[in-house]
Amino acid sequence: MFEQVHIGFIGGGNMGEALIRGLLKARLVPPERVHVCDVSKSRTAHLAAAYGVSILEDEARIASSCGIVVIAVKPQNVFQVLERIRDHLAHRPLIVSIAAGVSLSSLVEALPAETPAVRAMPNTPALVLQGASALARGPCVADRQMAQALALFKAVGIALEVEEQWMDAVTGLSGSGPAYILLVLESLVDGGVLMGLPRAIARDLVVQTALGTAAMLRETGKHPAELKDLVTSPGGTTIHGLQVLEDSGIRGGIMTAVQAAALRSRQLGKNP
Ligand SMILES: NC(=O)C1=CN([C@@H]2O[C@H](COP(=O)(O)OP(=O)(O)OC[C@H]3O[C@@H](n4cnc5c(N)ncnc54)[C@H](OP(=O)(O)O)[C@@H]3O)[C@@H](O)[C@H]2O)C=CC1
Ligand SMILES: O=C(O)[C@@H]1CCC=N1
Image (cartoon, rainbow, N blue to C red; front, side, top):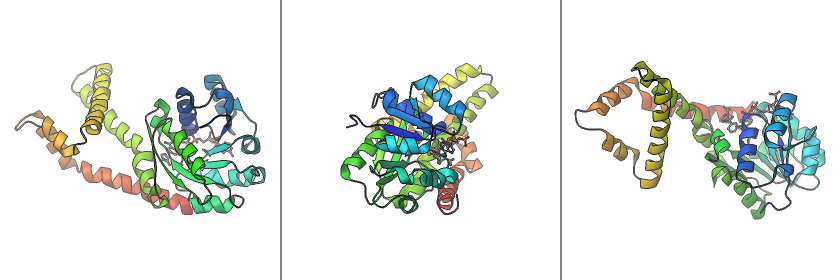
């Protein structure tokens, strides 16, 4: 699907690197067909040394050399990038923006007529090929191009096509989600340390408990509450821990966190 296709990244920060590393690890394209530009010279030096990708000096070179251009700069910098590349898109490359909140209509408006554009929301576990991405297609994206965009993100985890109306919710849930889960995992490790466990042992136990629980949820297809009941013996240890969490309002807190992040995504689209 990607024979001869060159993939360019404008912005090689946290997320650009996660995608690049994932794509190379999945052997979707060889490093000589991955091109990156970033205003930070320390970032490009790091990416060239770590992954052997090609570094191009500016956004225009990426746009004119690549069949797929991933825009991986902060939302605040997206329109400056589009302004710089718009005169270098005569070959109609596929533009894939991963910027939170930036809508398809604003992308299409800033690009030459009929430039195909996809809005995507990946997440950082792409770094280890366990990402969760959702993609919404713009009006001029051919089926073949959408299949390529999906394949790009499927190389680093799961990728679903959704209607654009869901992209802010996706951003608040799976885009930001790794941070919420890491906060919980960090707290669990600290709980173990509080009870005297050596930190390395607590960490190993927490990581495997999280992986095992997620695998159990995926493989059984059961409701989380049903699996939770399996852990929770009458009058046992777990119910005492759960009561403390319920008293703390953790469920509402997590739901409100997803809502706040989704609303921030919507707001970023209007005023980055
Ligand atoms: N981090 C995450 O978990 C996720 C992020 N995203 C989205 O991905 C995008 C990138 O986020 P993230 O990787 O975290 O951000 P980073 O700040 O880590 O990376 C962006 C990089 O782009 C550089 N940059 C800025 N302007 C330009 C330019 N004109 N040309 C080339 N490079 C430029 C920045 O340099 P400098 O720092 O010097 O400005 C920086 O190195 C954002 O839009 C974000 O919404 C999407 C999903 C998940
Ligand atoms: O915090 C952010 O804005 C980005 C978008 C999703 C995850 N990180």
